[in-house]
Amino acid sequence: MSDSSQNLSGPDFARGVDAKLLADGATLVGHALGEAILLARRGPDVLAIGATCTHYGGPLGEGLIVGDTVRCPRHHACFSLRTGEAVRAPALSPVACFAVEEHGGLLYVLAKRAPVPASATSAKAAPDSIVIVGAGAAGNAAAEMLRSQGYIGGITMVGGDPSVPYDRPNLSKDYLAGSAPEEWIPLRSTDFYADQKIALRLSTNVERIDVQARSVILADGKKLAYGALLLATGATPIPLMVPGADLPHVRYLRTLADSREIIARSSSARSAVVVGASFIGLEVAAALRTRGLDVAVVGPETRPLVRVMGEALGGAIQRLHEEHGVTFHLGSKPVSIDSTSVTLDNGTSLAADLIVVGVGVRPATALAEAAGIKIDNGVVVDARLRTSAPDVFAAGDIARWPDPRTGESIRVEHWVVAQRQGQVAARNMLGENHPFDAVPFFWSSHYDVTISYVGHAERWDRVDVAGHIEARDCAVAFRRGSQTLALATIGRDRASLEAEAAMERGDERALRGIVP
Image 1 (cartoon, rainbow, N blue to C red):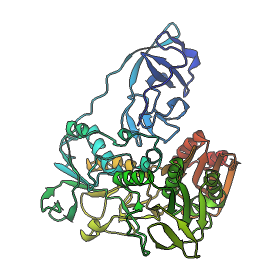
Image 2 (cartoon, one colour):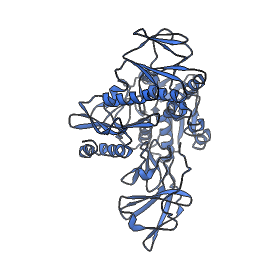
Image 3 (cartoon, rainbow, N blue to C red):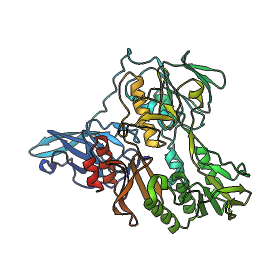
Image 4 (tube, helix red, strand yellow):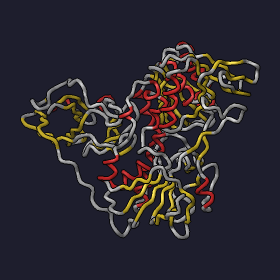
């Protein structure tokens, strides 16, 4: 959710600014017409767009220019400098675009430019209708991209959740902590989907997919014919299989309803146990501590997040939580739960008015598998996100795709990856030929500390560190052989952006400049 309220600073572009202040490739932040504006020079052209990211209000003036785009330092949203278009998620809405004039060596911003209308997609390339199974990150981003590309055919998005698509990452972050209002959570209003002629079928389950008849059969027996189909069914939480795990105070966090229920129960609870030292689990722990609960985290690892972040960074994250009063019981698993406590396999009993389970998720591939689509720990797709079935695509948590950086097939459960895959799949459903080659990115928030992570490293030979992890000012590189697979940063948003761009162009030398 972007916050448009801001203090206007820098030069008043309506009064003019010296053109010599803006070198090629440089940016300058100022204001005009009551709005913060980013000026950028690309060769002979001076371009002007709104300076505030439409995702979470990030300062684009602190971002990175890549070609004719600027990337937000907070969550790597990407905007066109020429049109203001949000060209890559997580931002979905454009920023304003302004006309720039030069007179007497001064640059002036005097008026907004009208949005560039989408041109209608060629009827030869576009299917008559598109069905999207899944109303989460990938499904919503695909539907919006279809319309932004000028597709005028029918779009139906089917989801089992009763809510319109919403900001899932916030469910375990600010919203759960009580510092983000609920009106921030929906990605769009119901009116938006009506205006865009996107048919939303919420609280609706799909019974099966008939790839021969090109139809989706709903649980109520209704059939939806499709010219192209996107599977974006996401993932489901892995259940905790111990006695007492079905008690009402044992909760999972996947949906908006889940987050609301945890918030409601936290109002009367005094103690909570989080089962699973995952990113979600630790974000929940931070949110519940912010709400004043006593929180214990249980996990089988010796360090939280050690398989993703390594020993040093995982240890620092653990100490951050301990500074805020969280207690850890690592190397342990629950063996039973009752109405007031959790018993661990080492005999320890932990008081628990509320239990939140976060031990991982599984890709929701049952529909695809039953339809005869190729499965391998996810739905197997090619570089264009096409499945083994004609005109059927997959995106998000279920998609296993060929990673161009490593040559391996990977499946990544990140919100931004899901959105970007939905956008690429949408364009390819319209007959385009775009490989999905975006570098994976995610962020995780713990109290006032945010960790940004670019790349993907399931295993590595060594971990190199620039800066100081304990001071929470660092860049941590995960490397195998001569290749930097991933980079985690704290307090170094610019380095994270530079690493993403370097990975995209295969520039290992630049990555070694960030973390030697």
